[in-house]
Length: 423
Image (cartoon, rainbow, N blue to C red; front, side):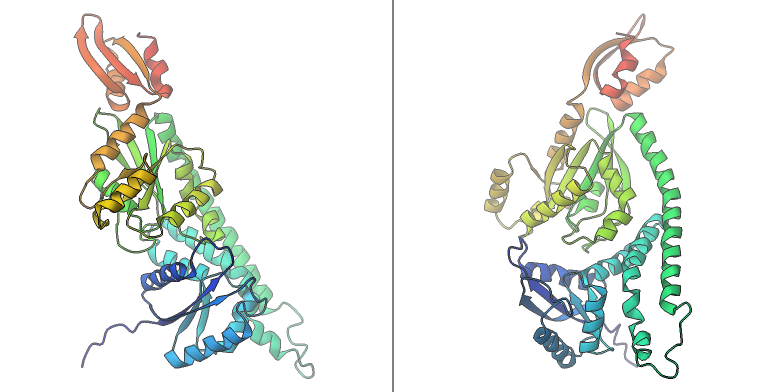
């Protein structure tokens, strides 16, 4: 017998060219194809249509819907994926046109499927399940439409189901499931909040990584902190936030948190479900906006990240733009253009380590920018304060005198008052 391997599902992608859209339909479909690849399927064909507004019945025009059905038969497709979100009725109508043996889904359903595939922690799995159930709830009517149609004709059996219908039962079950998941997430969020508040009270300088999916955030945190965060060349390889410590050259420790990657048309239900994870960005002192410097779409991707940061209220936090994947830039001209267009940005390669030292220096400058210069003599019986100074401050000089340890240091605002009494 010969092992022919796992048979991949065959997908047809449908994109819409909207007037005034900042995203070219071709690049949006290319990204959709990468999402398809991430779930283990393959793209066999794509088709597009120019529309001013979606058709309320089939999203695309009736002629285009018939063309899609013909493509499904010609290519033996298993699934049709729309690049925009479909209403439940549009999805049901399209399934009737293409045939019941072909699934019709939208971009949101595909992203939810990827999240379900990659969620590893209990909180991550709960967040995905919440988003899935919120997406499913309004689509239950379409799932039971075939039962409703069988009862429309009147006559014998037409009064069946005058009590509680299966649709009502399912809706109640989904509502209960959503409420149960929210309660469990709230309990986990309380624990995360306590951990987050303890970090806030410690006065440790907090850094959050934010960026488009597959920009290399996990690879960057590994390079900065010698960590082992999961890092794949796949969209949404990382869903759960991960915090690691980084010791700056002057000795101060800061924390860096890797968060979920963003993407264009990120479903609203996901932003709501992953609120506790995204709060890690909101509580940061500095955001490293990681950008794939080798991408032809970096301008659009940066705009998408900026929009999401604004959506979660994090636009006020100081930000450093980090262009990653410098090793993939084909010429020095490309590097020069990035440097001229974004003079305050840092160009790095998380693979080779190029530019990492410059990035750490920039982080250290921002961390020290609000520090106060203090000259203190700490009594020898307060060794805990000397340890705090080494852990959280930038020490310029340290000598041992008769009255205690003489320190010249830069102290962050939240702990400078502890040392002032020994000035």
